[in-house]
Amino acid sequence: MDSSGPLDLRCGRCGATVDGTRHTRTGYVVGYYLLRTGRTEEASVRRRDDEAPITYRRVLEPVDVVSCPRCFDEPEVRRLWLRFGNQP
Ligand SMILES: [Zn+2]
Image (cartoon, rainbow, N blue to C red; front, side, top):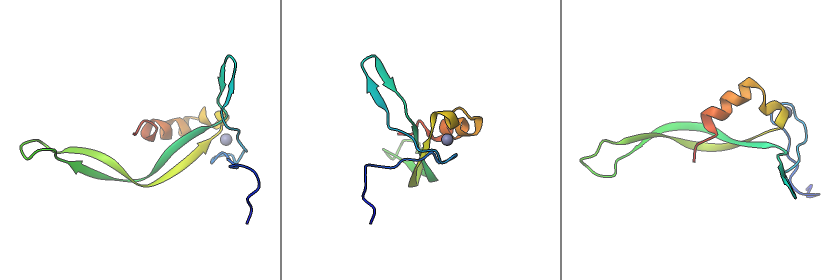
């Protein structure tokens, strides 16, 4: 079993090893972007019987996608991010 070192994060697109975000005195440097995505299904909740149900997308199998800053600038990654990135 290989247990050397902390997490070895790699970009899911180009395979480059990425560093964690480094905090500095003047701010921080983003080493990679983490996108949580996965298979989703439509689900609905109804809080009260006389209310219309609220439909939302439920993530069934969360998958963490790592992207290096360079790939994050690619349009296809941006699209993916916009679709999934802001889900709670
Ligand atoms: Zn990359």
